[in-house]
Length: 147
Length: 108
Image 1 (cartoon, rainbow over the protein chains, first blue to last red):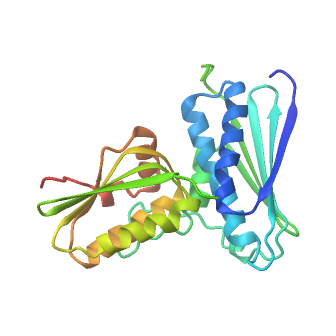
Image 2 (cartoon, chains in turn cyan, purple):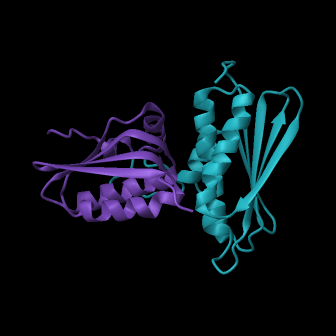
């Protein structure tokens, strides 16, 4: 893939569609010659962003959609934008990342792990909130190995 | 939509229950995982081990479930661990810091 371009897909904001996003990510990232490990990293990061949209973006009476766009930049950078148009997104204001390091069994909890993983697995993470939320994840390919 | 995205095989040995999970552990199958593990979490007379050899995917959803298993077992003073963790999964365990809580010696 030499030219910059964008692939966009829109799926219902339901858990069973997140693996379809991973499949599309695999197809694009493999074409861009990301390494196996880089693709595995991105699969988790994009799923974390999608999970947030599934869990928080819409209430159950108003099922919504998630739009995911994959933009190929300069042949070696992939930018993934996960967007929802949910009305309320209070949980995102609690944007603290957290890991289990240095904590006791009583202290460990899972909140903040998703955001932590996005930041740890991608080169850049940007969150924009305005009538919905966009999570923009970017990764530059390091290895030049075909998958 | 139904899919066999995550399958479970439980083996009961003497003083030990091993649950092999295969496939992908994500948000879609999280409740399935919880309902399989919940009754097993209460077996305090035995060691509970999760074999992850054929687990192809995990994210913070699955790690969150593991945390709740760790806590439940700890509150019952009952052992819990994982075995045969694929390297990609182990990397996520190490990054999130859950690794020390999952130390397993199944035959100990």
